[in-house]
Image 1: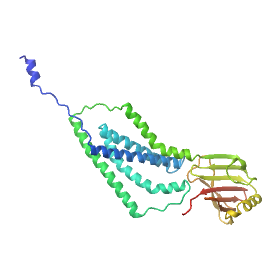
Image 2: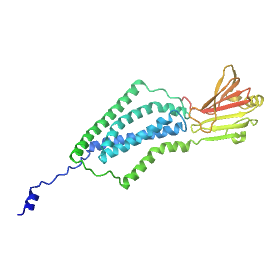
Image 3: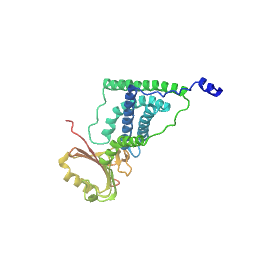
Length: 317
């Protein structure tokens, strides 16, 4: 036997460590975290649609959307691609997403009440909120615990096998990601489609979908995506009062002078959720109601300008 053959026999074969495989329980928890992240992103997308284009909440909802989406992607990479960075991001992301959903569950009824017809909701009871918060905490800690255990497995594998294959994605995974994003933004897209906004400037009474006096001129009109209509128009006081008394008397019309300045909402092309206000110092205010709609009109006597606002509501019963 030659020296080379002896050397080949004596040299031990280097064993390559097998990558860790996620358990079924870890896969189940990961899918739960991915669902929570997707729901969080969906809530953020609906919130952006609700307060768009400008609002103090816009940046918060955009951040919520991105945070939920990143959490979902990170959990997938961590569990199914063995990414330590993905598992680490999912560890904290899943816990925080649970808190996001708890907060969204508390404040969303109030935001939706501002953004459309309906009763203003009562705040949840302390016991109910505490139970939901405890459940969110338990789920978040469970997700964090499983990801921590998985990170320890991945760290041990990296120490045993420093050289690892590069991260790559299949066409099926890319297609699944596109479908996921489409599902996440579907509720926000539906809301935007079913609640279109409309803005008209310097038009006549025949051009706006409102019941206004024929004498109204230079009308600015806006209907928001939240079923709120605002209008501003020029008119003399006499024909305005005549129109109110003739057409709105049977709708519980109440007219009163105001001694202190009154704030009114202005119609705008880029209307925020709460709108821009204008102060009227002298004039009168008219209030009446129709079929599940409250109507408000403020007349600025020195300027000869009327400000109209309507808001839909639901019956108590």
